[in-house]
Length: 88
Image 1 (tube, rainbow, N blue to C red):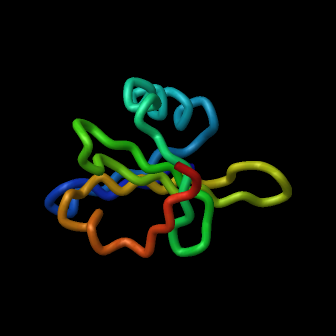
Image 2 (cartoon, rainbow, N blue to C red):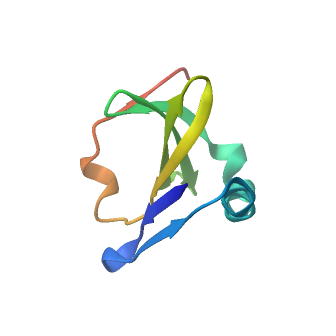
């Protein structure tokens, strides 16, 4: 399952591994700027465009598998996240 929160409160929900994978491919171009992080203590990936935070993806992992992907790409929410960037 993938959930997302976009600008102006727009939200979406995608279910099923194949559907989530198809949606995730849209973020592939931002992979070069991706940085590993922790969001509220959970594993996450932060993507940037031109040096500015573009999105944060938080992963819920159970028994070694990703069971949920939560994407935040609302510019108003990004600055206030409890986010710890890992590595440099």
